[in-house]
Image (cartoon, rainbow, N blue to C red):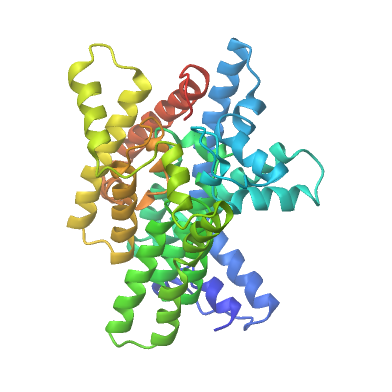
Length: 401
């Protein structure tokens, strides 16, 4: 299949005019232009809500005497990725808690180092610009998934909703959420389009980006194996996609084991970060403590708790709507990893940022709304709330996002 055909696949066949220009560079350019034109309202909407959030953060930072660039580029986990880009990984397990950088996956710092090597500016600036750029690629992929499944209006609403999630400010920080979401969105789109090698390759890269890359690998592998069992064409490509999808995650886990001289080295590193699987016991304890026993719980922790509860409810709606199996496996595994972890509680809303299919029931409900004013009020209120909470999260809340 030509590259032009792959590019043209970003527009659903039922709404796609015949493509002139063949499979050469002109055809590729035409396909990209057409796909970008179709996604333009979603990308503009996404930019608008995120720029509003940045404006609120800028004004609040000015009042409090903080610099906005250090807050976005060099705070909390951003420092770990920059350290890896500068100095590489630790070569021993050690015994110090929350100190071993082998807990952080390599693709983002590798990209930061590579791009910074051929461009002016600091690695921190490059890391921040890459995050913003990948957020736009993620927004395009999210639109493509929504558009393919339910039409352009749902795709636009889904993209904007992702941009106004409670902790969406992280999308424009030196973190890996935007890169991972971009890889996840386009991998899931490739699954829907039957592009198994693309799906497997993107899942491999996602497995080198975040621990939750295993959720995307499972989604691609399950969907590909079901396609093989279904006896449809392209069984060889589907089987190859299923096999390569978990390769990135497995490769990094194996490499960490070799580096520290223990087969279970990666899991011991996670143990040093107090991030062990407990089947959700820690999550339930935190929820009960925050929502039942504490008289004045911290606002940010309450928001995290509400996000977790609502996400479970949205997943049940996704099942009821019979979303494609790849989307259900991805979000189901993501929820399982996030809720079942015994690690720190406060970043869990951030960990769910890549789970954009959970927003599909909301996007579809808004798309069916007969009155445009209803959509405007919902999105407007969500935009203001997300912008305010983003500034609060970075300037008032004392912990990492």
